[in-house]
Each structure stands twice: as C-alpha cells, then as structure tokens.
View: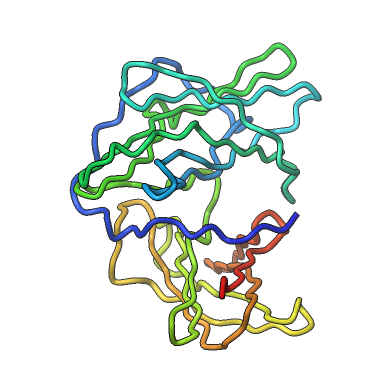
Amino acid sequence: MKKPVKLLMSISLCMCMMMTLFSFNIHAADNDNVQLYYADIGGYYGDGGYWATGKIAVKDLGENKNVVVHYTTNGDTWFDVSATYLKKSTDGYDIYTFKTPMVEWNGFYYYKYNWTFAIKYEVNGNTYWDNNNGQNYSVNISNFEYCQNIVLGKCKLLSESSYKDVNNIFHGNVMVKDYNPNKIVTVRYTTDSWKTYKDVRAYKSSYQPYSDMELWTFDINEDAVVYEYAIKCEINGQTYWDNNFGDNYIYTHPF
C-alpha cells in the first residue's frame, strides 16, 4: 500500500550537545541477522506528544519470528514493544516496523524526550541482538538542546521530509550516510503516475546537524497536486536507492 510522506518536525530545533547514551547490558551477536534499518521520531505537541518509530531488517531464518524493541525513556526502566512485519525487501531481508507508545507533551515551552533502545530477534529457538555494538541506539528531540531525531542503520539514505511552499515549489530533505565524500544524490519524480518522469539533483546542505550523516536538499519547481518520487545515491560506481521499499514516496498537497 502506498503511503504519504510523513512531514517530520524541523531539525533546526537541534542545537546543543547530544545526551549520553545508556548502555543495555547485552552483547550484540556477531552477525547481520538483525539490523536496525532506521529510526526517527514521530508526532509533536499538537498530537499530544512524541514517539519513536522505525524499520528493522531481519534475515528470513524461519516462519515464527519475534522481533522486539527493548527501550527506555529515562535510562532506568525498560519496556518492550513488538515490531510488525511489513514486507520483504529486494535484498531478501524481512522488514519490520515499530512504534513506541506516545510520551505525552509536558505542556511547557521547554521539552526534551529521549528513547534509547536495542533490538531483539527470536527465531528457531535462537536469540539475536542488535544493540549498536554495545552502545545502543538513541533518538531524541528537544527545543533547547541538540537532538538526534533520526538514526540510519542498515539504511544508506532516507527521504526525511518534504513540503510545498506558498510559491508552489516542492522541497525535500534527504539524509545520507557520511561514508564517502564523492557522491551524487538525485531525486527521480513523476506528477502523472510514471507516464513520464524527471530527475533533479539534490545538494549537500551547509547545515549539517549530525556527525555521522549528511543533510541533502532538493527543490522541484513544478506545480502539481501529487508528487511521487524516489531517491538515488551514486558512490564510486555503486548506486543505492531509497524508494520506500518499492512503494515510492508520495506527497499530496493538502489544499
């Protein structure tokens, strides 16, 4: 099922130092049977609060899989939330999606929320962990301190947000893993259900909020009601795509 692009909160809220990670005392298995694909933060105070969400990639090692996100919001109390099967990716991994319960907005101008987590994968009597090499993963949001509201794991690039401005220009943000300075990022889009398509270049932003990722931006100067698109990244002869697991991204102008 195709789904609309989620308009995330502005990363320009992130200003200060990233808070210390709490380490969950489990050693990650030395394999790639389970890997975080990406994680980010959903919601905002108008929704009543925030939650952590994301995708997980697991090897298809059996029929009866149990994929769980083990998380804490305060470093002391840990909870489990089950991930739900989404679809099989082109590289053969099963993709699961998760969403933690909402943490309600505190009602004050100052707010700060953090999720630290590891991923557990149970199948055929075996348990595999991805806890980011013992450091765990962390996403957080604050209107006062530096935040990391998105983390890329197995994912190499991700369409982070998009919107259309009052001048009918379509803008988007793309997060790319910062593992090679020589890269070309392109957006392939259509406004007529792929009867035709066009490519536009994305450009590295001068604002770089994270140390391990690059922010790239693109503009589509074509007025339309619906934009459907995918992101391509070319690095040293290799091509990587983010096409929303084959469904592409869809933005529909609300008015």
